[in-house]
Image (cartoon, rainbow, N blue to C red; front, top):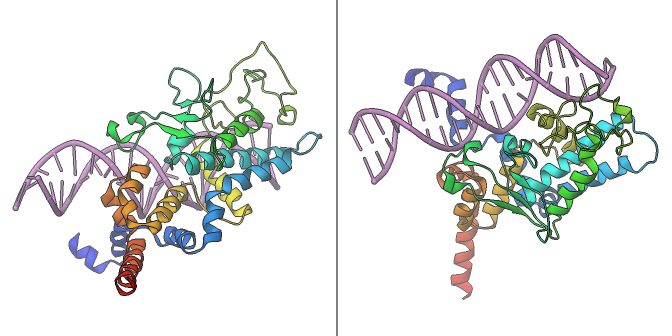
Length: 288
DNA sequence: TTTCATCGCCGTCTCATCAA
DNA sequence: TTGATGAGACGGCGATGAAA
């Protein structure tokens, strides 16, 4: 094996990739740390997804199947991005499997005086099994509109899914998609609302990761920031580390990774940041 | 034809185990 | 106690087939 590593280009590349972020991900993150405009676009992309969905829904006419798909896609991406950017960059499967109903619910909706959403992941659902590393995550109502976007998703987009509205969810013989619009087809004798916050278009199960990857790829490209779902984690970590190397521990906790892993993945930022911080220290010494 | 679910492959990451 | 290693889980993504 050692010999093979010395001779095989493929294995050499694999060994290298194991130690650092992939070139593709670095290519995505670099503009975020270098370009203020890109950074702001990344951090507020949920607004743009929401605007796209609202544009599609701004009609009194029945939606076509394609328009319905687009509205669901942009709306779901807005909700997902709000969780990642205004709450915590959860792993994709954890976010897609959030449940706000039922005995295993792990997403608490705003109620009473509380205006925030609360994510309460169990250690069993996390890649990191250490319970101490699984904090509760508040998604607050503030200027970044995390909670507002989730509330909008819940009230406007989620009911566009067959199992997204308890007042008219079909249990058997689902209505044609064309009729699934703002609850126009109602059957109060039926109630099978999905327990999942993000719902699969054709069942009451959670939105599948493959379909979501397709949606986020398409939606992000449409707003001029092509990315994958996992790029939320990479992007946020890169931005925070670029601000200061002292954020290393903070970023590790934020991502649910170990500091060693963060240091290894974002070494390319560290090198540049170390040089810049050192230059600043020299300038401080020189100019007092 | 379009949309979506499922499957599978490869890379990445965490964790448990073991040797130094 | 620390570092190396391998197993297993998860992320990323394409291929394929079923259903509308």
